Amino acid sequence: MPLSPEAEAEIAALRSETKPTLRAVSEGMEAHLHHAIPVLDHGFVRVVDYMGDDSAICQAARVSYGRGTKSVQNDEGLIRYLMRHWHSTPFEMCEVKLHVKLPVFVARQWIRHRTANVNEYSARYSILDREFYIPAPDSLAAQSAVNNQGRGEALAGEEAERVLSWLRDDAMRAYDHYEAMISRDGQQGLARELARMNLPASIYTQWYWKVDLHNLLHFLRLRADAHAQYEIRVYADAICNVVKDWVPFAYRAFEDYRLGAVTMSSQMMDCLRRMLAGEAVTEDNCGMSKREWREFRESLGQA
Ligand SMILES: Cc1cc2nc3c(=O)[nH]c(=O)nc-3n(C[C@H](O)[C@H](O)[C@H](O)COP(=O)(O)OP(=O)(O)OC[C@H]3O[C@@H](n4cnc5c(N)ncnc54)[C@H](O)[C@@H]3O)c2cc1C
Image 1 (tube, rainbow, N blue to C red):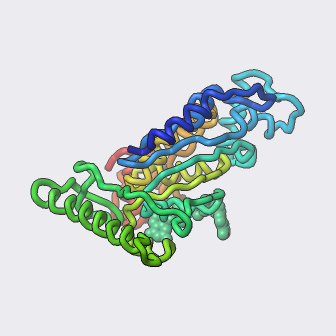
Image 2 (tube, rainbow, N blue to C red):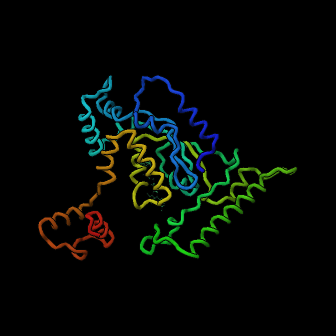
């Protein structure tokens, strides 16, 4: 259950209040505002606030007084040009504030993105909930044999059951001791800031995360990628769906020029030219490392 009934009621109350505004409004984003999108077993992503829309990007690029819009096609063309040529500052004019509930081990990866503003739930002040991420059976994968930073086939049978019960039992036992340590019961009770150190990294935390669109797209480029860990990728995927509705032109350009694009080194470009000229280019004569050759072939869909 990502949200308690009380939290659901607070969100319903927020969504029932509307005010007229002179600010730019994105209809797609208004539909998301305040709603919690479930992610993993107890997590969510919720848009708390936002600033700007596609036309705000164009307005900044043109430094105009009004909406600055010549036509919708012009706006999309301009956004695509900006994205293609890494003219990034107009994208920084849009911002979003998210409320995210996520396991601590996912938060450790997420927090590496330094170009955002974060305020996290205080486990010095408050008591953490008894909520731990327990992978769904099909996400319970073995260590990858080819990638040290990845996973392979899903575990099955007795091994899967044993791992799941360890994950559950260890988390519950740690939480029982956490509760026992902080409970007063006539005694002083250990400080929350100390008792929490006993909890596993699968426990959920929450934060408000505010970021501009340029840096958000950078985050999504890295974390919605197939190489990112599944547990952070599902958050990135949920945010991609929000961004698609918030700034549809910018998102389409992002899909075309970032998500679906590949970067080629000068050696790769050289190989590509030789291949187009009809030469048989192989791993032995490509002038690249084995790994780079594999990546090159993958980017050509030849892996
Ligand atoms: C698949 C994957 C595997 C990873 N594995 C590891 C790992 O094994 N170990 C590990 O430690 N990390 C790992 N990381 C984290 C990674 O190294 C980055 O820290 C993380 O992705 C944040 O990227 P960033 O610095 O570009 O983002 P942000 O912090 O959002 O920064 C955005 C951009 O701003 C600029 N910038 C921000 N701060 C500074 C600064 N202080 N100085 C100069 N420029 C700055 C840089 O251009 C940067 O690219 C991994 C990330 C991914 C996606």
